[in-house]
Image (cartoon, rainbow, N blue to C red):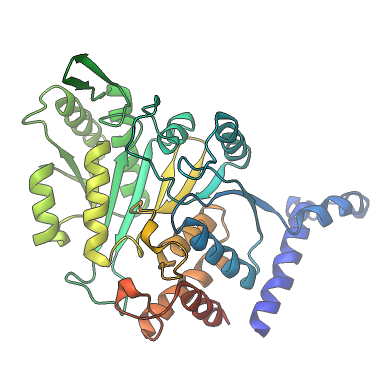
Amino acid sequence: MAALSNVRWLTRAVLAARNSGAWRGLGTSTAHAASQSQAQDVRVEGAFPVTMLPGDGVGPELMHAVKEVFKAAAVPVEFKEHHLSEVQNMASEEKLEQVLSSMKENKVAIIGKIYTPMEYKGELASYDMQLRRKLDLFANVVHVKSLPGYKTRHNNLDLVIIREQTEGEYSSLEHESAKGVIECLKIVTRTKSQRIAKFAFDYATKKGRSKVTAVHKANIMKLGDGLFLQCCEEVAELYPKIKFETMIIDNCCMQLVQNPYQFDVLVMPNLYGNIIDNLAAGLVGGAGVVPGESYSAEYAVFETGARHPFAQAVGRNIANPTAMLLSATNMLRHLNLEYHSSMIADAVKKVIKVGKVRTSDMGGYATCHDFTEAVITALS
Protein backbone atom coordinates (compact mmCIF):
# COMPACT_ATOMS: atom_id res chain seq x y z
CA MET A 1 0.00 0.00 0.00
CA ALA A 2 3.04 2.26 0.20
CA ALA A 3 2.92 2.63 -3.55
CA LEU A 4 -0.69 3.80 -3.34
CA SER A 5 0.25 6.38 -0.72
CA ASN A 6 2.86 7.73 -3.10
CA VAL A 7 0.24 7.84 -5.87
CA ARG A 8 -2.14 9.81 -3.65
CA TRP A 9 0.61 12.31 -2.77
CA LEU A 10 1.69 12.64 -6.40
CA THR A 11 -1.92 13.09 -7.60
CA ARG A 12 -2.53 15.91 -5.15
CA ALA A 13 0.77 17.56 -6.03
CA VAL A 14 0.14 17.39 -9.78
CA LEU A 15 -3.43 18.64 -9.49
CA ALA A 16 -2.41 21.47 -7.21
CA ALA A 17 0.33 22.46 -9.61
CA ARG A 18 -2.04 22.33 -12.58
CA ASN A 19 -4.71 24.36 -10.83
CA SER A 20 -2.20 27.01 -9.78
CA GLY A 21 -1.09 27.51 -13.35
CA ALA A 22 2.31 25.81 -12.94
CA TRP A 23 2.09 24.39 -16.44
CA ARG A 24 1.95 27.88 -17.94
CA GLY A 25 5.71 28.41 -17.73
CA LEU A 26 8.44 29.46 -15.35
CA GLY A 27 7.21 33.04 -15.41
CA THR A 28 4.20 32.30 -13.18
CA SER A 29 4.47 34.61 -10.19
CA THR A 30 4.34 33.57 -6.56
CA ALA A 31 1.59 36.11 -5.95
CA HIS A 32 -0.55 34.57 -8.69
CA ALA A 33 -0.01 31.09 -7.25
CA ALA A 34 -1.00 32.33 -3.79
CA SER A 35 -4.17 33.92 -5.14
CA GLN A 36 -5.19 30.54 -6.54
CA SER A 37 -4.54 28.55 -3.35
CA GLN A 38 -8.15 28.58 -2.19
CA ALA A 39 -9.36 27.25 -5.56
CA GLN A 40 -6.73 24.51 -5.34
CA ASP A 41 -8.11 23.25 -2.04
CA VAL A 42 -11.62 23.10 -3.49
CA ARG A 43 -10.68 21.25 -6.66
CA VAL A 44 -8.10 18.73 -5.43
CA GLU A 45 -10.61 16.12 -4.26
CA GLY A 46 -12.93 16.44 -7.26
CA ALA A 47 -10.78 17.56 -10.14
CA PHE A 48 -12.76 15.60 -12.74
CA PRO A 49 -16.54 15.62 -12.20
CA VAL A 50 -18.23 12.63 -13.85
CA THR A 51 -21.95 11.89 -14.02
CA MET A 52 -22.80 8.44 -12.68
CA LEU A 53 -26.09 6.76 -13.58
CA PRO A 54 -26.28 3.31 -11.92
CA GLY A 55 -29.37 2.20 -13.85
CA ASP A 56 -31.36 -0.96 -13.18
CA GLY A 57 -30.60 -4.57 -12.34
CA VAL A 58 -27.08 -5.10 -11.06
CA GLY A 59 -26.05 -1.61 -12.19
CA PRO A 60 -25.87 -0.18 -8.64
CA GLU A 61 -23.70 -3.12 -7.50
CA LEU A 62 -21.32 -2.63 -10.43
CA MET A 63 -21.07 1.09 -9.75
CA HIS A 64 -20.28 0.37 -6.13
CA ALA A 65 -17.38 -1.80 -7.32
CA VAL A 66 -16.12 1.07 -9.49
CA LYS A 67 -16.30 3.53 -6.59
CA GLU A 68 -14.47 1.16 -4.24
CA VAL A 69 -11.65 0.53 -6.72
CA PHE A 70 -11.34 4.23 -7.57
CA LYS A 71 -11.13 5.05 -3.87
CA ALA A 72 -8.40 2.48 -3.30
CA ALA A 73 -6.44 3.73 -6.32
CA ALA A 74 -6.79 7.40 -5.30
CA VAL A 75 -8.35 8.31 -8.64
CA PRO A 76 -9.01 12.07 -8.86
CA VAL A 77 -12.61 11.72 -10.03
CA GLU A 78 -15.73 12.97 -8.27
CA PHE A 79 -18.93 11.16 -9.20
CA LYS A 80 -22.15 13.14 -9.49
CA GLU A 81 -24.67 10.36 -8.95
CA HIS A 82 -28.20 10.41 -10.36
CA HIS A 83 -30.91 7.75 -10.40
CA LEU A 84 -33.19 7.20 -13.37
CA SER A 85 -35.38 4.17 -14.03
CA GLU A 86 -38.55 3.27 -15.88
CA VAL A 87 -39.29 0.34 -13.55
CA GLN A 88 -38.38 1.61 -10.05
CA ASN A 89 -40.82 4.52 -9.68
CA MET A 90 -38.01 6.89 -10.62
CA ALA A 91 -39.41 7.90 -14.00
CA SER A 92 -40.19 11.54 -14.66
CA GLU A 93 -39.33 14.16 -17.22
CA GLU A 94 -37.84 16.22 -14.41
CA LYS A 95 -35.39 13.46 -13.47
CA LEU A 96 -34.50 12.93 -17.11
CA GLU A 97 -33.72 16.63 -17.51
CA GLN A 98 -31.61 16.60 -14.34
CA VAL A 99 -29.55 13.73 -15.72
CA LEU A 100 -29.17 15.45 -19.09
CA SER A 101 -28.14 18.69 -17.41
CA SER A 102 -25.48 16.88 -15.38
CA MET A 103 -24.13 15.01 -18.40
CA LYS A 104 -24.00 18.21 -20.47
CA GLU A 105 -22.17 20.03 -17.69
CA ASN A 106 -19.62 17.30 -16.98
CA LYS A 107 -19.20 16.07 -20.58
CA VAL A 108 -18.34 12.58 -19.30
CA ALA A 109 -20.59 9.92 -17.77
CA ILE A 110 -20.52 6.30 -16.69
CA ILE A 111 -23.87 4.53 -16.80
CA GLY A 112 -25.53 1.21 -16.12
CA LYS A 113 -28.30 -0.30 -18.19
CA ILE A 114 -31.64 1.50 -17.89
CA TYR A 115 -34.15 -1.30 -18.35
CA THR A 116 -36.74 -0.72 -21.05
CA PRO A 117 -40.12 -2.36 -20.33
CA MET A 118 -41.87 -3.97 -23.28
CA GLU A 119 -45.28 -2.60 -22.35
CA TYR A 120 -46.43 0.45 -24.31
CA LYS A 121 -47.46 3.25 -21.96
CA GLY A 122 -47.84 6.12 -24.36
CA GLU A 123 -44.15 6.83 -25.03
CA LEU A 124 -42.28 4.84 -27.67
CA ALA A 125 -38.80 6.21 -26.98
CA SER A 126 -37.20 4.76 -23.83
CA TYR A 127 -35.11 6.89 -21.48
CA ASP A 128 -32.03 5.12 -22.81
CA MET A 129 -32.88 6.16 -26.36
CA GLN A 130 -33.82 9.68 -25.33
CA LEU A 131 -30.46 10.18 -23.65
CA ARG A 132 -28.64 9.06 -26.78
CA ARG A 133 -30.65 11.34 -29.03
CA LYS A 134 -30.61 14.44 -26.86
CA LEU A 135 -26.84 14.15 -26.39
CA ASP A 136 -26.40 13.02 -30.02
CA LEU A 137 -24.41 9.97 -28.91
CA PHE A 138 -24.21 8.71 -32.46
CA ALA A 139 -21.26 6.32 -32.18
CA ASN A 140 -21.24 3.25 -29.95
CA VAL A 141 -17.85 1.52 -29.73
CA VAL A 142 -17.40 -1.99 -28.35
CA HIS A 143 -13.87 -3.39 -28.23
CA VAL A 144 -14.13 -7.16 -28.13
CA LYS A 145 -10.84 -8.53 -26.86
CA SER A 146 -9.89 -11.84 -25.28
CA LEU A 147 -8.72 -11.66 -21.67
CA PRO A 148 -5.36 -13.36 -21.01
CA GLY A 149 -5.77 -16.45 -18.87
CA TYR A 150 -9.47 -16.90 -19.58
CA LYS A 151 -10.02 -19.50 -22.29
CA THR A 152 -13.07 -19.40 -24.53
CA ARG A 153 -13.96 -21.12 -27.80
CA HIS A 154 -11.98 -18.43 -29.67
CA ASN A 155 -8.88 -17.00 -28.03
CA ASN A 156 -6.66 -14.01 -28.91
CA LEU A 157 -9.58 -12.13 -30.44
CA ASP A 158 -9.27 -8.38 -30.99
CA LEU A 159 -12.00 -6.64 -32.98
CA VAL A 160 -14.01 -3.44 -32.71
CA ILE A 161 -17.72 -2.95 -33.41
CA ILE A 162 -18.88 0.57 -34.26
CA ARG A 163 -22.62 1.14 -34.32
CA GLU A 164 -24.71 4.13 -35.38
CA GLN A 165 -27.25 4.49 -32.59
CA THR A 166 -29.42 7.55 -33.23
CA GLU A 167 -31.56 6.35 -36.15
CA GLY A 168 -32.33 3.13 -38.05
CA GLU A 169 -34.91 0.76 -36.61
CA TYR A 170 -34.69 2.48 -33.23
CA SER A 171 -36.31 5.68 -34.45
CA SER A 172 -39.47 5.16 -32.32
CA LEU A 173 -41.69 5.82 -35.33
CA GLU A 174 -44.45 3.24 -35.08
CA HIS A 175 -48.18 3.49 -35.65
CA GLU A 176 -51.21 1.34 -36.40
CA SER A 177 -52.19 2.30 -39.95
CA ALA A 178 -55.19 -0.05 -39.91
CA LYS A 179 -56.58 -2.43 -37.33
CA GLY A 180 -54.08 -5.24 -36.90
CA VAL A 181 -51.48 -3.52 -39.13
CA ILE A 182 -48.44 -1.87 -37.53
CA GLU A 183 -45.98 0.20 -39.51
CA CYS A 184 -42.52 0.58 -37.96
CA LEU A 185 -40.29 3.00 -39.83
CA LYS A 186 -36.56 2.58 -40.29
CA ILE A 187 -34.85 5.91 -40.87
CA VAL A 188 -31.53 6.12 -42.76
CA THR A 189 -30.00 9.48 -43.63
CA ARG A 190 -26.98 10.37 -45.72
CA THR A 191 -25.68 12.77 -43.07
CA LYS A 192 -25.64 10.25 -40.24
CA SER A 193 -24.44 7.37 -42.42
CA GLN A 194 -21.48 9.42 -43.62
CA ARG A 195 -20.76 10.56 -40.08
CA ILE A 196 -20.57 7.05 -38.63
CA ALA A 197 -18.53 5.81 -41.60
CA LYS A 198 -16.02 8.61 -41.14
CA PHE A 199 -15.90 7.90 -37.40
CA ALA A 200 -15.08 4.25 -38.13
CA PHE A 201 -12.28 5.08 -40.56
CA ASP A 202 -10.89 7.78 -38.27
CA TYR A 203 -10.93 5.28 -35.40
CA ALA A 204 -9.14 2.68 -37.52
CA THR A 205 -6.51 5.23 -38.52
CA LYS A 206 -5.94 6.50 -34.98
CA LYS A 207 -5.74 3.01 -33.47
CA GLY A 208 -3.51 1.54 -36.17
CA ARG A 209 -6.18 -0.78 -37.53
CA SER A 210 -5.92 -2.07 -41.08
CA LYS A 211 -9.46 -2.94 -42.20
CA VAL A 212 -13.04 -1.69 -41.94
CA THR A 213 -16.00 -3.94 -42.77
CA ALA A 214 -19.39 -2.34 -43.46
CA VAL A 215 -22.24 -4.63 -42.39
CA HIS A 216 -25.59 -4.22 -44.17
CA LYS A 217 -28.67 -5.83 -45.74
CA ALA A 218 -28.70 -3.81 -48.95
CA ASN A 219 -29.66 -6.85 -51.01
CA ILE A 220 -33.14 -6.65 -49.44
CA MET A 221 -33.42 -3.08 -48.14
CA LYS A 222 -32.08 -1.62 -51.35
CA LEU A 223 -32.81 2.02 -50.56
CA GLY A 224 -32.28 2.22 -46.79
CA ASP A 225 -29.26 -0.03 -46.32
CA GLY A 226 -28.29 0.81 -49.89
CA LEU A 227 -27.77 4.43 -48.83
CA PHE A 228 -25.76 3.37 -45.77
CA LEU A 229 -23.55 1.15 -47.91
CA GLN A 230 -23.08 3.85 -50.53
CA CYS A 231 -21.98 6.34 -47.87
CA CYS A 232 -19.46 3.85 -46.47
CA GLU A 233 -18.05 3.25 -49.95
CA GLU A 234 -17.71 6.99 -50.57
CA VAL A 235 -15.92 7.58 -47.28
CA ALA A 236 -13.65 4.57 -47.83
CA GLU A 237 -12.21 6.24 -50.92
CA LEU A 238 -10.81 8.97 -48.67
CA TYR A 239 -8.79 6.41 -46.69
CA PRO A 240 -6.74 4.45 -49.26
CA LYS A 241 -4.46 2.95 -46.61
CA ILE A 242 -7.40 1.23 -44.85
CA LYS A 243 -8.73 -1.92 -46.52
CA PHE A 244 -12.50 -1.80 -47.01
CA GLU A 245 -14.90 -4.73 -47.26
CA THR A 246 -18.67 -5.18 -47.13
CA MET A 247 -20.66 -8.07 -45.69
CA ILE A 248 -24.36 -8.90 -45.42
CA ILE A 249 -25.51 -9.06 -41.81
CA ASP A 250 -26.65 -12.70 -41.77
CA ASN A 251 -23.37 -13.87 -43.28
CA CYS A 252 -21.50 -11.67 -40.80
CA CYS A 253 -23.15 -13.49 -37.87
CA MET A 254 -22.06 -16.85 -39.25
CA GLN A 255 -18.54 -15.64 -40.03
CA LEU A 256 -18.13 -14.24 -36.52
CA VAL A 257 -18.89 -17.65 -35.06
CA GLN A 258 -16.81 -19.62 -37.58
CA ASN A 259 -13.82 -17.34 -38.11
CA PRO A 260 -13.89 -14.08 -36.13
CA TYR A 261 -10.18 -13.49 -36.75
CA GLN A 262 -10.93 -12.14 -40.23
CA PHE A 263 -12.48 -8.98 -38.72
CA ASP A 264 -10.80 -5.83 -37.48
CA VAL A 265 -13.21 -2.86 -37.33
CA LEU A 266 -16.88 -3.38 -38.21
CA VAL A 267 -19.29 -0.50 -38.83
CA MET A 268 -23.05 -0.95 -39.09
CA PRO A 269 -26.52 0.55 -38.53
CA ASN A 270 -28.31 0.52 -35.20
CA LEU A 271 -30.14 -2.81 -34.93
CA TYR A 272 -27.36 -4.87 -36.50
CA GLY A 273 -24.89 -3.33 -34.09
CA ASN A 274 -27.02 -4.25 -31.10
CA ILE A 275 -27.15 -7.88 -32.23
CA ILE A 276 -23.48 -8.12 -33.19
CA ASP A 277 -22.35 -6.49 -29.91
CA ASN A 278 -23.99 -9.29 -27.96
CA LEU A 279 -22.90 -12.06 -30.30
CA ALA A 280 -19.27 -10.89 -30.23
CA ALA A 281 -19.32 -10.46 -26.44
CA GLY A 282 -20.30 -14.11 -26.19
CA LEU A 283 -17.17 -15.07 -28.11
CA VAL A 284 -14.87 -13.79 -25.36
CA GLY A 285 -16.85 -14.61 -22.22
CA GLY A 286 -20.18 -12.78 -22.23
CA ALA A 287 -21.74 -9.52 -21.13
CA GLY A 288 -19.73 -9.41 -17.92
CA VAL A 289 -16.32 -8.91 -19.53
CA VAL A 290 -16.75 -6.54 -22.51
CA PRO A 291 -16.61 -2.73 -22.06
CA GLY A 292 -18.26 -0.18 -24.30
CA GLU A 293 -18.53 3.55 -24.86
CA SER A 294 -20.63 6.05 -26.79
CA TYR A 295 -19.55 9.35 -28.30
CA SER A 296 -20.95 12.56 -29.67
CA ALA A 297 -18.97 15.60 -30.80
CA GLU A 298 -19.06 16.90 -27.20
CA TYR A 299 -19.85 14.04 -24.83
CA ALA A 300 -18.49 10.63 -23.89
CA VAL A 301 -20.52 7.97 -22.07
CA PHE A 302 -18.97 4.77 -20.74
CA GLU A 303 -20.95 1.59 -20.15
CA THR A 304 -20.84 -2.16 -20.63
CA GLY A 305 -20.48 -3.40 -24.19
CA ALA A 306 -23.47 -5.76 -24.04
CA ARG A 307 -26.29 -3.92 -22.31
CA HIS A 308 -28.02 -6.29 -19.87
CA PRO A 309 -29.58 -5.37 -16.51
CA PHE A 310 -29.07 -8.99 -15.28
CA ALA A 311 -32.15 -8.52 -13.12
CA GLN A 312 -32.17 -12.13 -11.89
CA ALA A 313 -28.89 -11.46 -10.08
CA VAL A 314 -30.03 -8.39 -8.15
CA GLY A 315 -29.10 -8.61 -4.48
CA ARG A 316 -27.30 -11.94 -4.88
CA ASN A 317 -23.79 -10.46 -5.08
CA ILE A 318 -22.89 -12.60 -8.11
CA ALA A 319 -22.52 -10.02 -10.89
CA ASN A 320 -19.20 -9.79 -12.71
CA PRO A 321 -17.81 -6.22 -12.41
CA THR A 322 -15.09 -6.76 -15.05
CA ALA A 323 -16.88 -5.03 -17.94
CA MET A 324 -17.82 -1.99 -15.86
CA LEU A 325 -14.34 -1.71 -14.36
CA LEU A 326 -12.75 -1.88 -17.80
CA SER A 327 -15.24 0.72 -19.04
CA ALA A 328 -14.17 2.90 -16.13
CA THR A 329 -10.50 2.53 -17.13
CA ASN A 330 -11.42 3.62 -20.67
CA MET A 331 -13.11 6.64 -19.12
CA LEU A 332 -9.94 7.48 -17.22
CA ARG A 333 -7.94 7.25 -20.42
CA HIS A 334 -10.42 9.63 -22.03
CA LEU A 335 -9.76 12.04 -19.14
CA ASN A 336 -6.01 11.68 -19.78
CA LEU A 337 -5.54 9.88 -16.46
CA GLU A 338 -3.35 7.29 -18.17
CA TYR A 339 -1.53 6.17 -15.03
CA HIS A 340 -4.67 5.39 -13.07
CA SER A 341 -6.29 3.81 -16.12
CA SER A 342 -3.40 1.42 -16.69
CA MET A 343 -3.05 0.64 -13.00
CA ILE A 344 -6.68 -0.46 -12.63
CA ALA A 345 -6.87 -2.26 -15.99
CA ASP A 346 -3.70 -4.19 -15.16
CA ALA A 347 -5.11 -5.15 -11.75
CA VAL A 348 -8.36 -6.45 -13.29
CA LYS A 349 -6.51 -8.47 -15.91
CA LYS A 350 -4.09 -9.81 -13.29
CA VAL A 351 -6.96 -11.15 -11.16
CA ILE A 352 -8.48 -12.86 -14.21
CA LYS A 353 -5.16 -14.27 -15.39
CA VAL A 354 -4.30 -15.73 -11.98
CA GLY A 355 -7.72 -17.39 -12.03
CA LYS A 356 -8.24 -17.84 -8.29
CA VAL A 357 -11.07 -15.32 -8.04
CA ARG A 358 -13.72 -15.62 -10.73
CA THR A 359 -17.44 -15.00 -10.73
CA SER A 360 -19.95 -17.69 -11.74
CA ASP A 361 -20.24 -16.51 -15.35
CA MET A 362 -16.52 -17.25 -15.72
CA GLY A 363 -16.80 -20.67 -14.13
CA GLY A 364 -15.89 -19.66 -10.59
CA TYR A 365 -17.60 -19.20 -7.23
CA ALA A 366 -16.50 -15.72 -6.23
CA THR A 367 -18.94 -12.94 -5.42
CA CYS A 368 -18.91 -9.47 -6.92
CA HIS A 369 -17.45 -8.26 -3.62
CA ASP A 370 -14.73 -10.94 -3.72
CA PHE A 371 -13.67 -9.91 -7.22
CA THR A 372 -13.64 -6.23 -6.30
CA GLU A 373 -11.49 -6.88 -3.23
CA ALA A 374 -9.10 -9.00 -5.31
CA VAL A 375 -8.70 -6.11 -7.76
CA ILE A 376 -8.02 -3.70 -4.89
CA THR A 377 -5.39 -6.08 -3.51
CA ALA A 378 -3.80 -6.36 -6.96
CA LEU A 379 -3.42 -2.58 -7.09
CA SER A 380 -0.73 -2.60 -4.42
